Image (cartoon, rainbow, N blue to C red; front, side):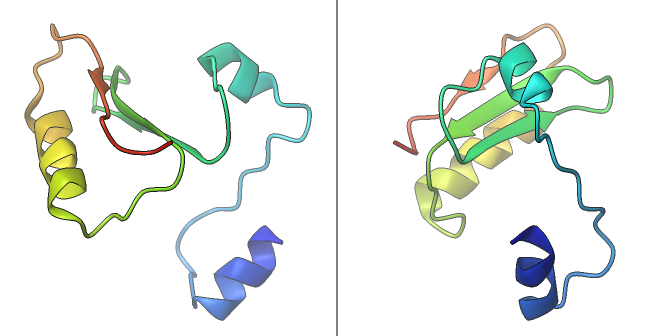
Amino acid sequence: MVRKFYAVNDIRNLAVALDRPSRVARALGVAGLPTTVLYNAEGREVGRVTGVADWDAPEVTAFLHRCLVASPANSPANSPIGT
């Protein structure tokens, strides 16, 4: 399914990574799918979206901006978006 999505959307420079035994999902405490986890350059989680998001919506872009400017000392941003 992922490879078909990549082909349909002409995605070429993003590796396919599957978590079939759900080890990563369990380790991250993923409550449902889809879940997007954002990390900073130091490998710290700076944001998380659980559920479907309209990535072009103003509230979503504002959330992403907050995640990008978050200092490493701050706790992860919790998204008001998603379900």
